[in-house]
Image (cartoon, rainbow, N blue to C red; front, side, top):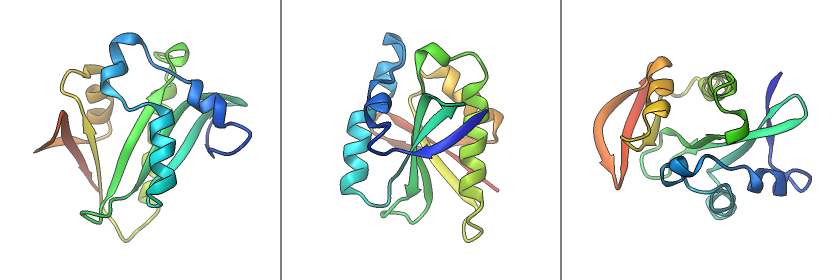
Length: 144
């Protein structure tokens, strides 16, 4: 069963050690950098993705201080657990968690145009490109 848990003392190194395939590395910021970012940017909420008791991925979201909207800053599934449906089920869980905050009706995220699998996943949840580009990230948004 997929669950989202806080990153803490007990699972910190396991989350740091999660990684994607070599050809996916340019699409993501490392979990170590993401956790450092969450330390200095309190609006970032890092979460470990578990299948039963095994950490299989990492996500980070929060309300962006620049635009006041929810962003999914990071989402990754370790290479050993990709193509097993874990990405879909954990992404659904993450978006449902964000949607619980009824003050908001939009979620944004950035994705590299070459990350075809990620784009397909995000589109399956209703995310669409909004025309904005931030560095190499093309911005997708979900209005609900």
